[in-house]
Amino acid sequence: MKVQFWGAARTVTGSMHLLEISGRKILLECGLYQGSRKKAFERNRDLPFKARDVDAVVLSHAHLDHSGNLPTLVKRGFEGSIYATSATRDLCTNMLLDSAKLQSYNLRYVNRKRRKQNKKPFEPLYTTEDVTRTMKRFHSVDYDHSFSPIPGVTVRFHDAGHILGSAIVVIDVEEDGKRLRILFSGDVGRKGLPILRDPQIADHADYLIMESTYGDRLHESSGHAKEHLLEAVTTVIDRGGKMLVPAFALGRTQEVVYRLNQLHEEGKLPSINVFVDSPLAISATEVFRLHPEAYNAEARHALETEDDNDPLCFPGLQYIRSAERSKELNDLKGPAVIIAGSGMCEGGRIVHHLRNNIENPATAILLVSYQAEHTLGRRLQEGVSPVNILGDPFDVNASVTTAPGYSAHADRDELRSWAGRVRQAGQVRRVFLVHGEEESAFSLAEALRGDGYGKVEVPERGQVFEL
Image (cartoon, rainbow, N blue to C red; front, side):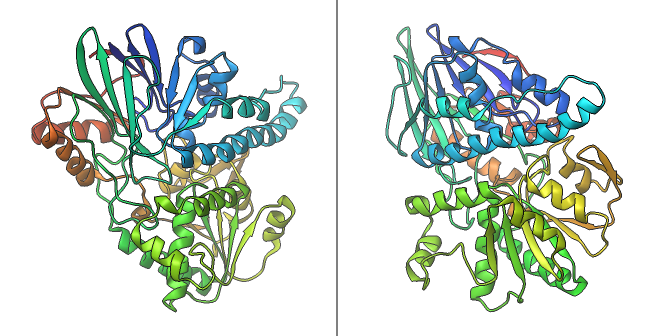
């Protein structure tokens, strides 16, 4: 029995971990690698193993860095089943179709320039047809219900509290008369976040595969996030400009809208037009409305007591699907808030809003999502100017601020607390830290050793461990 780490190893994107048990293989996640465009395309296209050799996929949640390369796996010959919660399956339908369409759209722009330069045009990583074939392989499983992806292995999902449908994966294995439990954290959420329940815990584990995204830092409290948002809105009204909020369509957009709705209900939100300019975010919001069983008590109460029974809507909020309406925002006069994907500014409509507004000093950019290395969002966060947007340089005259209280990932102390509860529940032989840049992962590894964990590994890409 062994595990090999092929993605999210000393980085936060492209999550992909391969378990081999009694000659059969289970893939935990199949995410898109994001970063340097050339490196990302090559790594996403060239899978490091034969897709046909994978017997099953177990998916913790729908974010593209965890699910986004599933169509490539199917395109390369995978014929097994993909197991996920029902909310994750519903969200992936929209997320993966949008990913395929976005690739095609972005390549049209890039390829026009390449043809003028007499260069060979790029092909998309996968198409909507590949996504359709992928969705046929999904099997939905509710939280706390057992299933067997391969003989000798039983799996259960617990609520991870990260995004809608996110799961902590409990894997019980029986091989050659031996029994052991592997616990895969997926992405661990935070206590007290709006809409979702707090993350759960398994009662014990022999091996722990755990995320480390914020293993070296602390967040401001989630309660401060609402006040930070109000301050940013007030500032942009005073400037008479636009506030651009790059936000992941799944999770972060709904949280920002929920916070704005709270401010409106409290009578604190100034009069301002708010646009959610993202067809994917609109579709994801509709999926949220279909799964109130995943809500925490506060969100359920809001759903039951609001006059329109919709805590994701308030006066002045407009959801925009059409490209034509999106383009009209370029000519919009007066202050406004525009929430659009992608959260790392690597694609989607936010790129075009940045292109049209980033050189205007009245523009404010509020970063509410994690910004991975080599992304446009990270360069903005680090104060780089000029920046390249769709191949052209732009001076950054807009103000750029970060609101860390919006993170849906547990921070250093929250990760240590969660891991401590696992250790107290039973003996853990070894911990593998994934989904974190090196500084974060190694910092958390040192902290966990100090907390009593004996063996804590930070795997390199392709590294194999016997279990």
